[in-house]
Length: 66
Image (cartoon, rainbow, N blue to C red; front, top):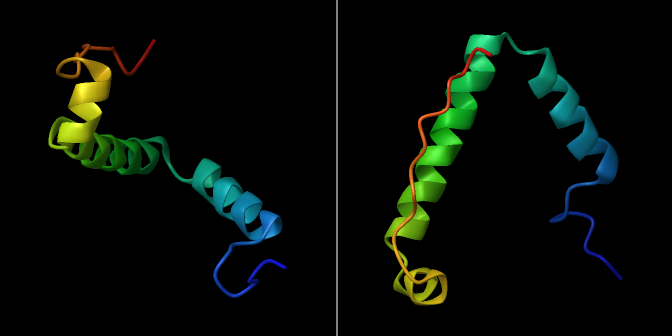
């Protein structure tokens, strides 16, 4: 049986996503940029990931407004 106190419910997750989608574009961009930086730092500094991946992460310059 799942522990309901530690696992978010589907409705809670869906509500969080909906709240995120209602944020202003600039705030969404700030949050996503912060999360991307955290993940890049994690993967760039994790030796196990580097061995599996075979090299450093590639960075792309992607325009935000298309």
